[in-house]
Every structure is written in C-alpha cells, then in structure tokens.
Amino acid sequence: MLSYMMRCAHTGTPYYIYGHEGRQVRDQIHATDLAAAIETVVEQLKGNVVYNIGGGRANACSMLEAIEACEQLTGKKMNVAHRPERKGDHRWWITDNTRLLTDYPSWRVTMPLTGIYEDIYRGMVARCW
Image (cartoon, rainbow, N blue to C red; front, side, top):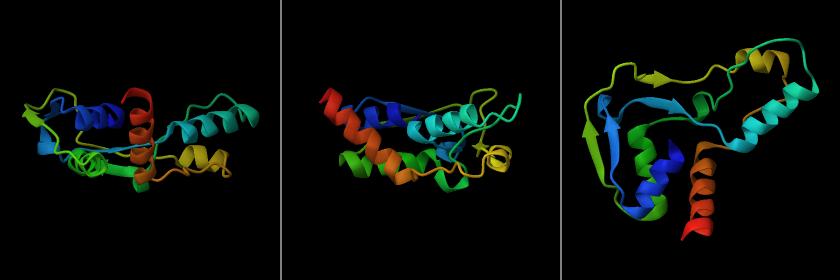
C-alpha cells in the first residue's frame, strides 16, 4: 500500500480510497524487518509453526495518516478520490506478533513508520526520478 501511495503522491496519479472515509487502519513492516524475522526463524527453527508477521501497533496508521505523511515528504497535495466500500475489506488490521516473539524473543521491528515512509520515498526518487 505505501509504495503505491507514495508513487501516486509524487506523480499526481489519482489514489482511490475504498470505503470507510480513509479511516481504515493497517500496520506496516519494512522489508528488512520482515527478512530478519524470516532469517531468525530459519536459523532457529522450532518446528512446523505458522507466524503472523507485521509492524504491530507501533507501526499502524490510517490511510488518511499515510496520505498526510506522503504529502509531507513529497511536498505535493495528493489527488485522492473516494469509492464505495468493497465487500471483504477490513476496517482495521494490526498484526499480533505475540506467537513469533514468544518463540523468537530476539527479533523486533526496528524500522519505525516514519522511517518506512522516508525509505520508500528516497528509494523511489533515486530509482525513478
């Protein structure tokens, strides 16, 4: 969600919000933190277990908050349009990492939400513009 949103912010491409007036919440995790979690599990395998891995409560934001962050970084007002709610869309999702953290207490999310936004924007500008 964030990479596409940042691209829309930078290019002026319309960004569509489906339902809930942009108040739906999602947690975000940086790819390096996800890779570190996978590496930790592979290196210290504790059996056949499925884990939820996400940014957790500290890295959660609404779409409106994410839009505001993208606008601040790019210095551009986003072209946002609202669409009707889609069947099956979640209003709120924050990943519970408790099971993973119980088995692998050394792993933690290290990249804060602001760092994720900044990294996406820096990488996008370096690669594309």
